[in-house]
Length: 502
Image (cartoon, rainbow, N blue to C red; front, side):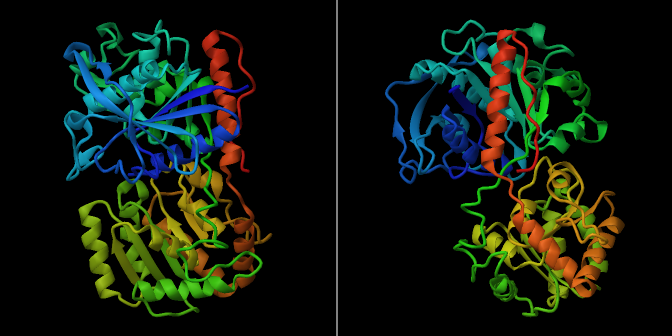
């Protein structure tokens, strides 16, 4: 059954990206389209999105967006497409809301009007359907930025001629960020103060947009099965675990896929030598290349550990910092790429300056260097405090770079712990979020490197054979969409999709 699907999100590659949300939104529609669905994508037209580069063309007319007590607001709409596809992407251009240097914040300070900005995106996405004369069967919202959509569909848009009958799916990519705003935000939502209750959008006497979305979405999902379970606990629910437990039967986990057209050592244009599971010769050349690029001694006999990602507490960077002095006493090398909390920049930069033969740090982000680290490293470290899905561990497996991860969320779902007796598994895992557990697990990996090379070879071969495909993920979303339509119409649901490894 072919469906009409509207996906609304705050970011998507290749147009604009701040995190993993953009990766999902930029890829998933392509695979849904292959299943026969009419998929449309709505994004803000941040001024960092180049209209000329992406060939954006203005639609005729002006989009009118009702902003509750603030009255109507207006914006232009630009149309483009996901590159090399026929999937339409519509950009809402509003200089006051999106003509800024940041997406959500500037100088690490969130914009004070983020409630207005993203309620505008949510309502604008629904109003756009009238402008396009588009009748979606389902509207797919993502994170707090568009979590108002399920609430709007159940209230002010319930009898709308274009979207009134649409089911909704809310995908939670990160529970930590919930869209919490003062009560006055209710005036902008325009859904009535009767929804400002404990069983509505109210939390701690504030409007919580994610909570409203969780209560009102037809179905919910997260980006791994493990994370779907974890967010129902106090440790990972960020105060909404009770709400999620109430909707347990409507909450599913679907592990993200990997775009193997971009992440493949056989064809990667960013690396110095291509290689495969059948011929790993090029990996040694990639290791020497990244050692040279990062200013480390070019030694093939010393294990190289790579880290790529945001230097923030979520990623366990504080625990890694605590473990680092002891780690640097071991026979290893570490390369880091990323940016985040200012203290981390200074700390790791200072440690690199005093350990030039063992640690190199590049503050910032360089896509080509990220590829080269994945290809050249022997191990890839991800000590996350929580990880809804994670992608770098999946890239690492594909590149024969053995993950060392904390067993949470998508990391636990996608990495199989090493079995020394059977020489099975795909990586090394620890569970306690402590410097000691991290150090011990890195030590375990290094001991295996130096003393059981057949174990390293087996881990690499098994990892390179694993695939986390978007085809499989899209099929699960397809099933969720159809289940949501049945729920919306009051019919019984199908057997829920399982987030099994592809």
